[in-house]
Image (tube, rainbow, N blue to C red; front, side, top):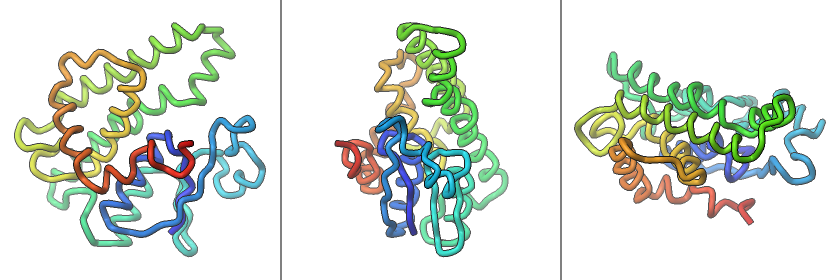
Length: 211
């Protein structure tokens, strides 16, 4: 498999964790979102992903560009170490947690949205940072109210896709120094996950394009 990735993209980060968790080897192809105006904007990359985003996963004749679709594909293509619970309604509950981050937080604080806010609404850097902090904190508070009260992970005793979406979002939360009051359980989950090799080797700081 090939993964087109940017080291600090939370969407790509979560896919790296999933690939590691399922013990699937892959080729890392860096796409720098800032260098030379953004390598994702080139016509060559546009042929790989018409939306000019990362991640993109290629597996033989299959090419997928959305992280949730990639997670679902990986679980069907490789039965080793499932990403989602199999039981009903645990699968749906896990998917809800995934979507709280995937559609409820990450898109509202990503690079394209921030550039649009600055260009069209002329917000300053201080306002931009406050926007990010509010979006992340409010989303994580909602997430924290949905997770299991028992066990070390979001779904309880089972590591799932929910945790693989959570940890990259917490990485962003730390970058922007949000207020973690009321989010202590999420920080416990983070500490547990970051001890696992699948999370350690996916961390942005050790990716080949993080220099």
